[in-house]
Image (cartoon, rainbow, N blue to C red; front, side):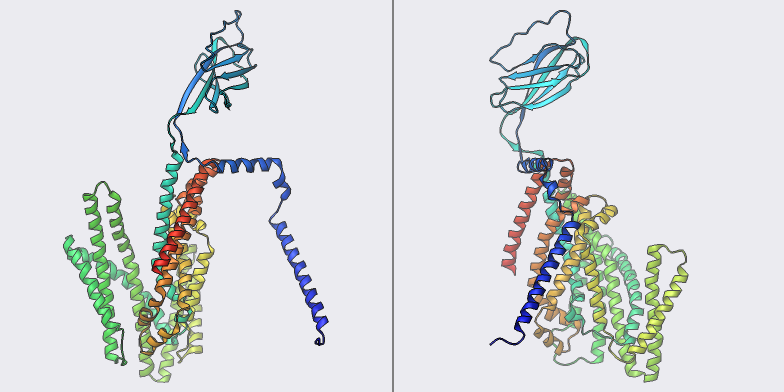
Length: 609
């Protein structure tokens, strides 16, 4: 038995489907209009001839070349005709020869040039050779299967009373084939492309892994803070950033003083300081803790972590000295391989550059943590009224300081003429915002700073991923110049955003059981990440990294169009020069490398993951 109203529902469903089809047709029709689809232009003979020419050139890659043997044949010629007719020259019909008919013409006339007994299917060029011996190219052609050709040429308006000549130069293959110059150039650039992608992937991975934890919702959503704790962290974090960078620079100078330029002393410091930092960190972050630690133990562990940080920074400074000295030694020992010593020395320079940034961030994080602990201490020791007063004052100061720092960045970026007015205005706005937050969240541990960091990180990653690496390459080319280094930087920046997103999504999909178990023991957030998160994400992280290397190999062929180095730079040049046979070699090399990378990454994922 049919339900009442069924025919009506079917009619409405049919009408809705029909309207959806009509709407889809309208959308696609407008899409054809916007994208200017023109099938009539594609059918024109001119376009089809161009397409066929390009396809034929691409189907004949310039991989091999043959040694060319050049043969020159000449015949006397007069322009204009002399008073006495020229004598006919003797011809050996068994040897290659050419005939010029007629043997003399008026300036600007036409003649026929016919060749016999030449190399079959050989390239030939016809020249006019006046008495000055400055050859004038007239035509190019190819002999037939019997070594014969016939060509008519229009001579220039050039008259001389002496004998001239019509010359035909043929080039024929001789000897075994060998790799062409295009093939050698393509090999050099494809090797450059592979290592360009490797360096970009490595650099992107090293930065994306720690950033991915900030964009994982399951790790960040539980992080909250009171208005007082957040305000204190905002106030002391810049101080930690500056003091950490300053301390790192001082440590770097102390390492040079302590080692006295001796390699053994630098090496001892590079080994002993990280070892000390490792043992201190292991003690401060125990893996198993059945009883909640006392306040004294927590304070001692905080000092141990601070000492571990200083020791690690000192170890990095010593390590930079060791690498720089080792690079010089390798250059002296292996003069035939100078790139090895330069690489080791460059690693030391990179460590020295990163040392201040890493130390500043570590100090900022440490002081921010101390600010949060101080807020909890004040919440216990102060009365409610006194706590609210301190909270309001600190929140106003934090809001003013934060927006003032942002305003200072805007002033620097846009070179504003009246910075004090802007800074005072934004500081006042920040003070109002801080006051509002302290009133709204005062006295409660409920500000979701973890989610705020999560959304900020996601927004930054999405913005960077939205900008193609090709655009980034243009910016870096302006900074470091045309070449593969600009490509490495562009791909690294894009890889950081892409891999951080993939990594964070993998963190969000981990099993919650180990996370809850480690958290239930009273472990800190760092301990939770080390013992509950990292063991679950290592295999997919390896898989994603290998896949990103494969992507970077393909993307590096595109950033070469903007001067980012690699095979794309050579491909772009040949396309602009309409040298499609050479471009075909580069396209073939790209296809081979991409396919090889796919098979290699699949095999590695199968063995490792």
